[in-house]
Image 1: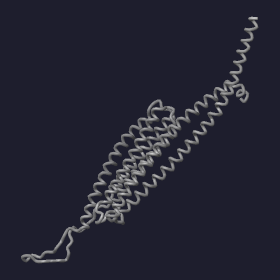
Image 2: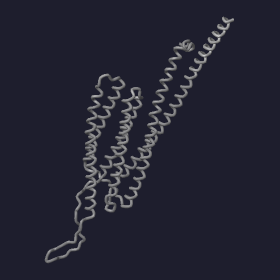
Image 3: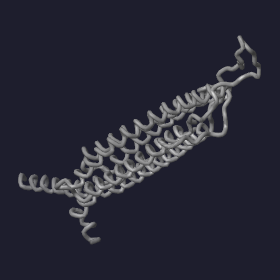
Image 4: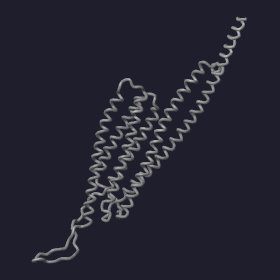
Length: 330
């Protein structure tokens, strides 16, 4: 009787084990299907976010380009005095802040590449190229604004009203300092200030990029690099060298005589432009912050998808090695 009971228990356990194995295989097969569906859903979401980032970036870029084009086509009048120059200076300062935002995000991306050996290197390298392109555009915009600041011209300082008189036998003409001369002097002072600041900034950028180029050269030749790592570092070196040549060309541009805009703005127009710029800077700042938030979400999503794909590969490998049906298909 005891022997029969033991056999019954053993048989029951074996039955449970076989059933468990069958259920486990079925569950594992189903988990692969579910995981593929999950990856597809996450990839679609990533594509949607990437599309929104592109659309937002394009719209923001157009807003900036339109604003720079409008400001570059204007100059101060005797009525507006230096208001247009001030607005251009404020616009250039805003563009500089945007460049710093791009550079900060670029440094964070480089740090992510260095920290995570499994990072999506190709995608992050594409991100770096996009950030460099945005920074280049904004720097070119700054140069364009500085170039549009009218330089001084030869203007007669004094003008007379046609009245003359004699005093103790000496002939005099009533004269006063010309308003045109005053405006010309204001233009010259503002232009020289803007150009000097731009030249100093470009000279500093050239020095920094020269140092980065030397560092990048050493990094490319470092021992023990994988082909992928070496390719990324070579791209970084090429980007730095390209930016260095661009900064040198821009330094020459801002040192040349100004291209004086044809259209003068009145005081009221200049005041309206100041308000327009304030609103535009607020809008653009908000747009950039939202785009950065989306970009950071996209980076996290890419990493999540990478992890899910690695998980899927491991599950498929297990099935190939342990699933009798998978072995039959080979």
